[in-house]
Amino acid sequence: MISILSKFISRVFNSLLRGKRKLKIGIYGPPNGGKTTIANRICKDWLGQEMGKVSAIAHETREIQIKENITVKSGKKELEFNLIDTPGIATKIDYEDFMKHGMKEKEAKKRAKEATKGVIESIKWLDNMDVVIVILDATKDPYSQVNITIIGNLAARKIPVLIGANKIDLKKANIKKVKNAFPQYPVVGLSAKYGNNIDEFYEALFDVAR
Image (cartoon, rainbow, N blue to C red; front, side, top):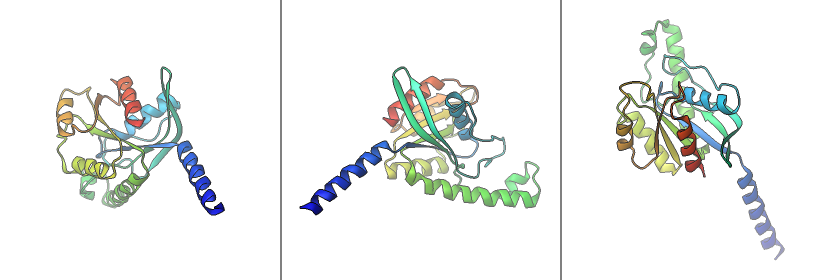
């Protein structure tokens, strides 16, 4: 009898601990889609500081970056979470692509190795996520192998997803195409760089994370 009661108390206690666990929200997507840019905007809006460095060269973020204890507010609603910015997912990383941006061969090979390691870490971290924000470049074809791989991994894990169709400040942006590609998830068009539609983005995040 004592053993059964002990197990019951243990289950209740563990349940309470899980309830108090800080929500983990990960930012995923292909390289140069604007993941760190949106991470910086969220952190600046609610913490007053940036997450990390951005660059026009792919794979600037090659390690997991975390900002803890972010609280997003909208009216009476609050959402508390830890934000995880992940390296861009890619199916192929060629050091010669970095050399096209002026890097020396040694530096390019080092960056390619780090970027490959970063992709592996990003995928590993998926198992730790409660919610994932997928940031896609709305000026590019959403039906890419990388995008389908990312969405497929999220669907298999049944993780709640919000898709940010980024770079709507550019003429080639096509939000409708992103929505048609992934109709099973909410899609919000935004400009992480300029903050266009950022309030709509936060409202959608509330809905997905609840």
